[in-house]
Length: 279
Length: 328
Image (cartoon, rainbow over all chains, first blue to last red; front, top):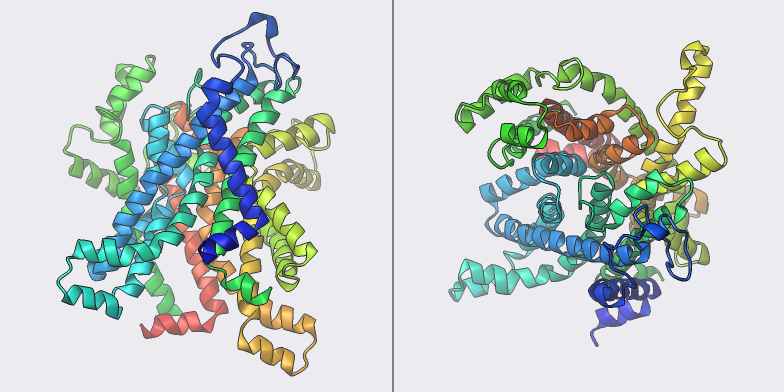
């Protein structure tokens, strides 16, 4: 076992985070098998029913089972999180690589683009884009991905900028390695760890953005279940149907917490400088 | 310092241009053009709105020309007229909303710093102690909580159940009949929940940041020197360590502006506060494109100004930054 993995396993918060992520992913994958009801099946006899043995988390205003809809909502949240971060990471690695490797004016252009994107409040930009497109899950994934690649770009660029004049890189170049090979084989692998950390933390961020968008009615549209849009309904009935607001919020909270704990744990495990020297 | 400021201002020009290009690009994401979207989604606004849009954005011209004409008006701060209500100029609408959002965000920042710095310092000074570990867990819990959900919970708890605080709007119904002091108190009462909610995640994030920044500084040789010459621990921590540890926090403060402004959409919508976030949300819902575009550009400019302020503050606080820029 590598020292990083050992450090990760010794950190109880990181292990807890990984466990949460694992359980949530399993629940999302298995939702069709384990969900007690059909997520779209309405039931006029159980409208806004409080939690009971039949409906552990109660029902909504159409009599749909909240637990079932939360399980299906996990599929939405996690897939938005992973796809959006996937898009952001690919863009970030590409732009960061060319900026860091070629430097000079290429670097200037990419970094000015990063400055521009960082100046626009992301949530406003996401909202504006959604306003000009249809709000649906595919657009939400794309928009979040396209507005969150700046961190990875900076990471990769910084890594390459500091490494590209190292002797081993110059040696590889002298031996005739192409630019693509230098970047892909000799340089990028060094940036793998910080990019992984950024990606895990990015999933948490993307889940929060998606749920906020859906909560505002600009994300995943009903009848599809998302944690955010269950909460929208919860807000309307908050004075007498607390279960509609409590459980989806808890689901978001726990999931985001899991990714954050896991991501921070990874960071500490990879770069143990701080706590190791002092502790 | 002046040289630094000039340099910093010049650097903003390409970024401002980029912001307008992206904002303009967003408008052209719509399949077909924005007039087809407008009319297909909102059948009431027929031919008239379509003509209005065509004219407002010169949609019959080639795209670079459209951008040029639009940019020409934007640099004069002319964002056109809103489609909704009394067709007022977008700039007027923004002007009355900006102070509201800024007040909430500045209050949130003050709250963030007031709470996060002590937490971060305590965690760092007593690293790995029980206090540090407990604070770490609490901070993680607080950081992950979705802001809009927290807003709902606090609304129910303090507004509905306990009835201590108003849950919506900026002023009470009898605001006009109050004296000036009462009016101020009324504002404050309405702002408590929104400010707390929008500061919440920031407090968690900043306290982590202060902690790691402190840990970084405490390892430096000059801290060892300060301790070696027998200075009391308080002096070492607050005068020697904290002041240096806070330098990167200034930068982070600048970088957190877009997040705070972005978050205002959620909090202002939930609490019914007439700020920029609510304006943006309402404009999107009613497809009021001039307002959407105007708000997007203006919030980006405000963010840039926030970053500029942070950088100037850093240059003022840290001579190394000034010299670094002057010599390069």
